[in-house]
Amino acid sequence: MGIIKEAELPGLGKKYLAQLESGDRLAVVIYDEGGRELFYFTPGEEEPACSVTLTDQEARQIGSIIGGAFYQPKVLEKLEAAVAELHIEWLKISPNAAIVGKSIGELALRKKHGVTVLAVIEETEKGKKRTAAISPGPGYIFTPGQTVIVAGRRAALEEFERMMAGKGG
Image (tube, rainbow, N blue to C red):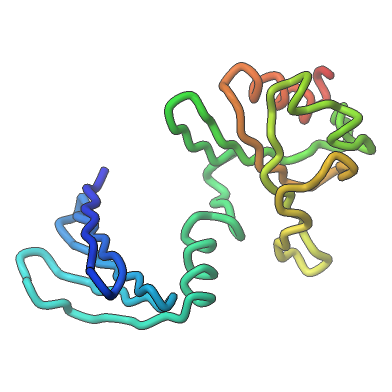
């Protein structure tokens, strides 16, 4: 895993420097006004090989893409990230899942199961992904084929995964 250093740029913003396993370095400057600059350094070089300037909106869109919000590689059945005891997973709803046709509130996902739904992504007719809901409320109803991004402790997510596969509830 790479190393990331953070530095204040008084009157400008913040700078993040990522030392990658390959030896390459990426610098990201986030300006107080919202713009971003990305700099790519080849191993051993002090001057950037190239740079790019992004608006705040462009940076957020690119960040979402890099973070996997729009596409989950096919080699991964589920994308998992863990910070301390918090786990985040992307899970697809099977047609016979116990949650199909039910709302978040009806299932009492947070209260009863310890699971928080962060977002729901669905596939459009043309096979593209679109975000159906970000932080959906208790009235949100699940349908087959959606990908649900959930957060919680390991045991809670395992129970929720069984519900998604149609093996529990």
